[in-house]
Image (cartoon, rainbow, N blue to C red; front, side, top):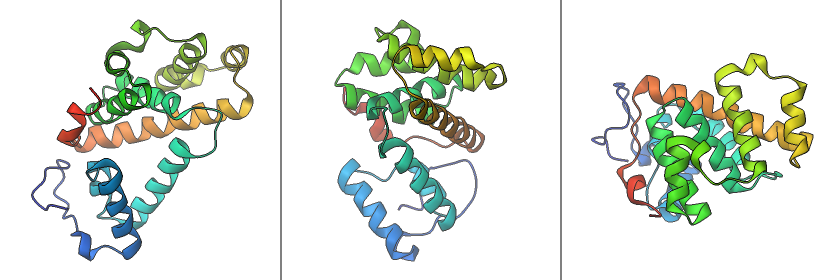
Amino acid sequence: MSQHTYVTALDIPLPSREELPEDIQKYFSKCDQKLGMLPNVLAAYSHNVEQLRTFSRFYNTLMFGDSGLSELEREMIAVAVSSTNQCFYCQVAHGASVREYSGDPKLGELMVMNYRAADLSPRQRAMLDFAVKMTTASYTIGEGDRQALRDVGFNDKDIWDIANVAGFYNMTNRVASATNMQPNPEYHSRHR
């Protein structure tokens, strides 16, 4: 990890990889191999190893664990929530993931700009409408909102997963925005 790479606006010293515990070094190497880079969000969390471990475990469970939601659907939630919150880091990073999982660069852009302009299935639109309502007015969600998800094929476990993915990105968006976390430049050109 370069000490000279701009990650956040905070002046928190980041450890070198060699200073990190072995499990974290292996995790970062896996990122290098799979992604061709270490995402700046992981670099930013590296100053607090326990926060990094917790963040990474939760992220990986939410985004890649067993779920009735596809990986693309989870990334779509990440982008719709991040777009609503105007989180530059997550719009760029997860917009690239939508492009990757969908194989459609246009969909990635539409999701970042305005998911309502995209040609989505009723299932996807209901899922994103729910995630955005959680983002803007979670206190107004009622049984009708949950039933709307059931009506397009989601079960209650899926609704739990939608809520958790949306909730996670609402948290990370706020941290990224508050610290001026910058996305890795590589994300901008990926999967176009």
